[in-house]
Length: 65
Image (cartoon, rainbow, N blue to C red; front, side):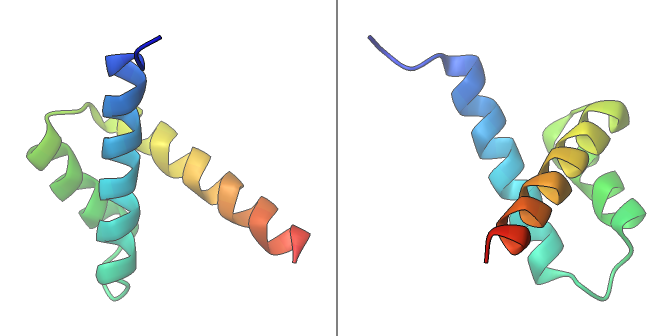
């Protein structure tokens, strides 16, 4: 069964946001989210949901170590 294209697109977007955050640690998250939204065309609400999911996943990874 082929992968769902919408799921694949979300994975790509979340990876892009993670990369932007890790490469620009000196820049505020709000500014990075603004740039991310401009580059991807996503709404700020969606970008903030991605950011929340990323934070939660990172917290879980840290707790498991």
